[in-house]
Amino acid sequence: METILKAESIRRTYSIGKTTLDVLKGVSLEVRIGETVSIMGESGSGKSTLLHVLGGLDTPKEGTVHFKGQSVYGMSSARRARFRAESVGFVFQSFHLLPELDILENVALPAMAMRSAGDAKKRAKDLLEEVGLGSRIGHRPQELSGGEQQRAALARSLMNEPDLVFCDEPTGNLDSKTGDKVLHYLFQLVADRGHTLVLVTHSKDVAERCSRQLFLKDGLLI
Ligand code: ADP
Ligand code: MG
Image (cartoon, rainbow, N blue to C red; front, side, top):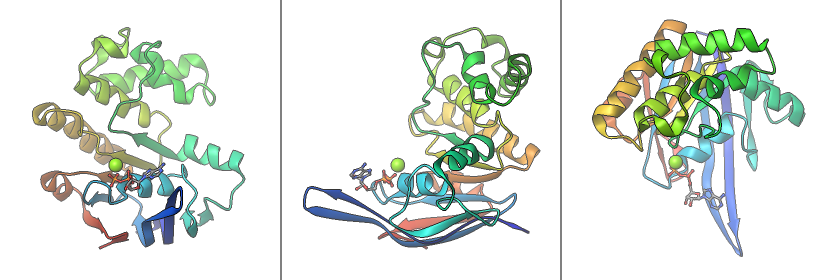
């Protein structure tokens, strides 16, 4: 299978006052189209940092990320913003829905710049139906349960048919039953549409549902 994402020798440090924290110490990773990759690791091991670097959200101190052969951090920032909008979907632990918009508007929002409003809303409605929220489209996020909000966030992440879906502990704020339901939809949508998935999780069971399991330890992937 063809490589879609290739990270080489990624280093990321955080400087706090005079101390420097070496979070990623030379991480390399190659992901092929259609793969589902899980990343586990202790809290504070740099999983979120790595996901942000891979998704074009955080420039590494050293190393390169290539998406379909193009250097993500070699692009202009405008081009990189377009890469994120068109090719990447993110699901975070805290759902990051906008409270002043209803669920349909939240999900349609990422596509508003690229499609007509009517098209965007039609696609958003279809996706919301697929995650079992077809009857909740007019509700505000705060009127939904945590699991429902995360299912809406999942629908939003797929709005632009991204090549890559990054999920950062998507069930971390949910009880296990609710979390299982979110994961059911996640894995089903990813399989149906052939998205490539990189998933950070604390759960060995969830990691084992992916085609490849990686661990982040002492700043390196093993
Ligand atoms: P994980 O997602 O595995 O829990 P993170 O990538 O969030 O880990 O963080 C890795 C380490 O980097 C942690 O020690 C964290 O405190 C630190 N860190 C993360 N973001 C920042 C930041 N913006 N400034 C300083 N330190 C940070
Ligand atoms: Mg994290």
